[in-house]
Image (cartoon, rainbow over all chains, first blue to last red; front, side, top):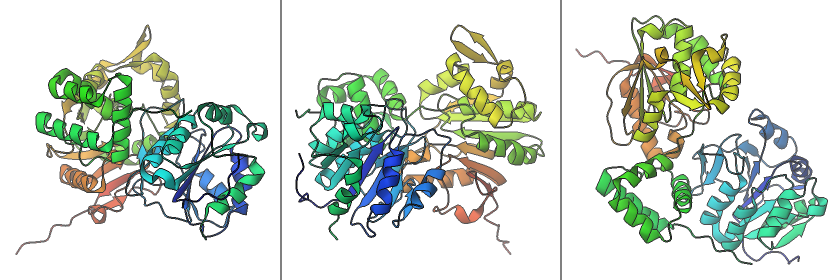
Length: 195
Length: 283
């Protein structure tokens, strides 16, 4: 299942997760190298009341700058962006964010699928997507879009996920490039960087 | 295992948007592309068109379908008392100032199905200001205005709205404002008597009055920078001196040309007060 280091350069990595994924992210962040050559975009399901505290929590765990994505903000390498609560986060072709307050998708806003799909459209093969633990089917069809566009796809090993439903839903839709345990994710992400 | 997802491509979307402008006068060319593409693809799938050509043919030849298209593309999603702290700021910091005017004009730009207009009317009523207020509620989309005018919302939403209302500082029994009938809630006519509904397109229509408060929430996120700045100018022209402009929680005038003429009310909520431009005395 595992390949060697992917040959294409990556402009953005999107991590999508729901229940049981915050802990995984908190574990990954301290191990990430400074100055990664791509942007990291994190889309987490959460209660809309649990708002801007998330960026603060995550930034305390990493040397990389963390901020909540703002509408029209240019997406820059080496930064970590968090999807704001209660909006869908979309990627525009000029590599900037836009926000969208349309219907929830699979009971979720932000929806991982919306970010995955619009990003796949823009970055094509220069995109990587990761689906983590969760009790929701969100992310599966977006990850397929990333794969169809030639991007790199990774699913957290269901046997290692706190809630395996979301990884399993993704695996039912596609055969990803990688299935990894959470302990291997930081190294995988660092290796996507060209520097 | 490869699943092919049938989708409307960028070039097709350009064709559709050109048709809409040429045949019906709707200009979506300065909308954020990612969102409009998602909306169009969603509708294309929802209405089960076998091909893009049939989708386009329908739009070119069926004005009734154009109404549906506009309704579906322009995201008519809204709530009552959404972001309670925002309504609390309106209640505590803006309404007391509006109360000093003999007559209050408010514009809800892009009101969708009207939930925010009814929220505002409730607050005005509680501040004893509704009798001297007029709420102008506009949207590009005639279908949603029809719903807004009726003031009928899903009863299943009322629990959430009631919680929002209380969190915003509402002191009354929320259910006193509507009568429940089967699965719907119809809001009191004393509220809607003070509302004027009309179609207005922020892209192409001009200012039509002067207001002490303009609310436009979660509309500008769908516009590109250029269109945003045109709409900001429209709002500036349409505000009285010392009038207020209220935006959605992720929207800001900070990077726009009107920013120097406005001052934010407090720091947290997206409410600004027009403090300029100061008239230069002509000698």
